[in-house]
Amino acid sequence: MATNTITTLSALRELYAPVNPRSALKELPQLDGHAKRFINLSPFVVISSYGADGRADTSPRGGDAGFVKVVDRGTLLIADSPGNNRLDTLENIVSTGQIGLLFMVPGVDETLRVNGTAELSTDENERKLCEDSRRVPKLVIRISVHASYLHCAKALMRSDLWNVTKHIDRNQLPSMGEMLRDQVADRMDTDTVFETQTQMLERYKNTL
Image 1 (cartoon, rainbow, N blue to C red):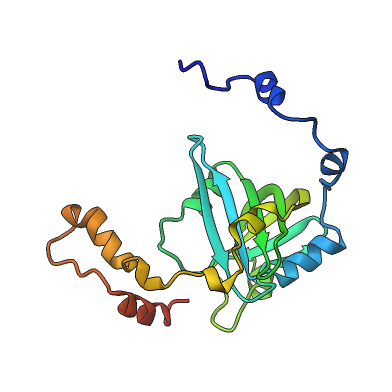
Image 2 (image 1 turned 90 degrees about the horizontal axis):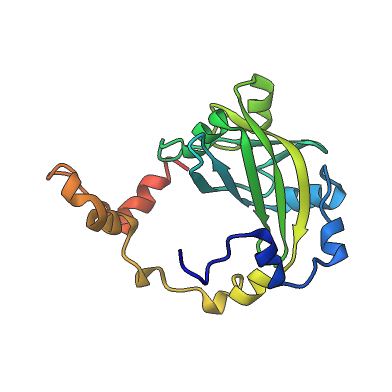
């Protein structure tokens, strides 16, 4: 084992100052008014989960601001919109039920973290509550909140994420279809067609 690897909690803590009391106190067991407002303004959330085999997964979800529904202080609903049908997040929820959420609001450097347990619901009322202009979802992710806290702005400030003058031209990267071709073409049928960026965006119009 490498000698420069941290392997104990005590060794880890030796590298850092004690936690700021304010940071320790900020974790709440439920959503307060500020957290609810943050979620209602958020069009984007990152979901973290892990399966029975311990393998972790992180998946982005997006929609109109407030697409994640706040039912009450301890309950959230997230519509499952069409994706690639891998179902990584959903399978992990069935396996362990553990979930972590990171909410972002464009232009705001602070984020909101919510941790809890999740279930997959096909309840008609919950599905209707998550209906958008496109569809009623097949199912919703029902989250029981165990912890909620605001995360400081440092990471987004360092990245300058919302600064449009630093946004790259999409042409600096190949299309997703082209990258996929390079990654898996040798394992696909020879007649498989890999989309250009324009073709992909056109297809997405009908499946968002």
